Length: 196
Image (cartoon, rainbow, N blue to C red; front, top):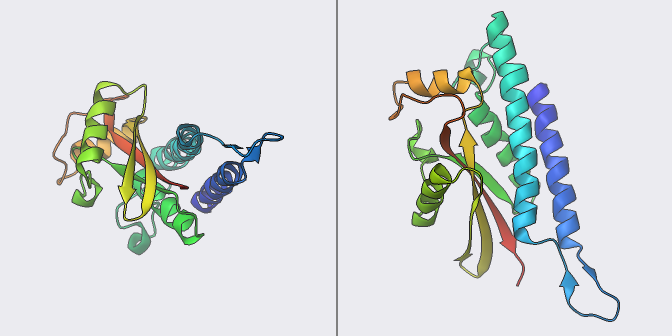
């Protein structure tokens, strides 16, 4: 229930930002639209995505696991457990995509447990390297996909709890096992379509 509520909150915030961005105003007597720059939209989205996942990680997963009440696991659907924080983000992204919004977001890393969570392009790989060296700022670029221009931003994804570290350091498929609190474990990539 908590994950559905948080995912719904993320969707509402995403729609609000996209509505503001899409319904840009024009100055009186001007034909130039004054919209929100894509960097700002990406920052807004990242703030919502990251705060929802951090809240879920600390106040749901870690709290219930520490109490011994319920655990998070990879096979959460079959085992009636909680989704891992990475799965929570992936599920909320899938829900957002089903609404018709063309904004996409996902976790990725240079050392992914699941190979599908590695960088899909050279630009994503470069973005991960950049946020590894400079986690305080996102790596941004504009790309063309077919006839569509896309703005892409990669934000550092840090280890916020012992649950994050424990999962990555102990997982048999993990290529890196020495993460510490606040280490950059990978990145959150947000992709936003740009209008021509």
